Image (cartoon, rainbow over all chains, first blue to last red):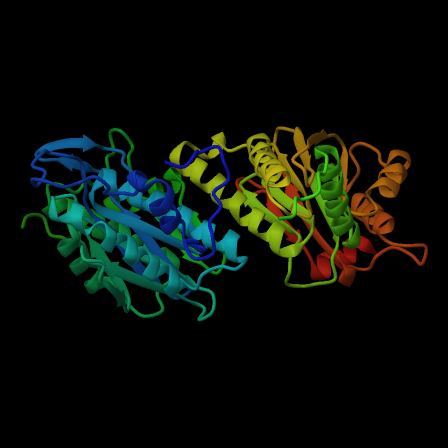
Length: 272
Length: 226
């Protein structure tokens, strides 16, 4: 183990370059997400994040996630956050084993900023998406043990001046989505809801409304997805990413929008 | 069989120090000034792409004079050190003091154990948050000596003359524009202050929420100097 208080210096042949993950692999591999996972599959009921969505609108993308984490049949958390800024112009949201997923997001955030500081320039949106794919792939052994992490990545492509959405599978496979994607246990319901309501060139407000409605639809059909909690005033996490960068909506804003939804005409039918 | 000549340790150290000082004196100088918005760093650097000033961490900046490849390597090592520490502990556990000490260790080691010392001088600066007016500046020399400096810090060949002038002309709580004009004047010659295209300027802006470092360039730089 190198001395953590000394400067990490490398000879040119083994220099990890601008990648923080490679640096960590050199000096502290035990800190990588999913490190040390081997042996029998994990059968513990550990917290899992459930439903997240990303929706492209006219000038950017919306990312949203419900707030529930489940461990088996138990609710592990009512207030978990699943949508995070990756950097100024992109965000990442997570579904799957919550512990490794949050570790992966933390590593991804440092990875992007580290590249920016070492190289003096920002990665392209595509470059960021590929970096996240590599982190997901590095987690494959842990995924085989039952600790799968499947993120969504979305951002504003400053070069192409539009929002873009990327999804992943557990092997690190990276797929660019045209308009929207959902991930997690309630994703089928959320995705179908978005599919029915999405239109090209929709406004940010409409896309936010659609995201809230899709999460509500998912919570309606999937036990692991949390709906708006009016008693405790817990509402989905929502972020807007456009030419002005990443900004998370404040709780009051999401609450007001959720109230509108709840008082509006119930599109799902009285009983189904 | 020939015996090597005996050279006293004093002579070895003196030769190395002279060598490093000469290398540093050849380069252009750099000034860091505490001012109202934070810590301003002004460097005499006509290059648009090869920086002397850069961001290390949320509230920490790095600046250097001397041999480019050497301080560039030290800069990257500093970014790695800070990011590793922030990742394994917490972002608030990364400090300029600790980083300056790590630099001092490395420079001191190289100075005493290697044939050739590093021909660099480094500055590690840190500002507090929006409601916290503290600032720290650590000046690290080629041989690993660390100095904790207040108000201003000058690196490079002309450091002595510029420091003398700053004693007269510096005042606490200067505005950004005044601090920048003072820096440009002192780095300049009798022919006048340095102009926007001869300067590299960055500010550790304590009003910014997380990453305090920002570069001041192009139109903003020109209008502040006007």
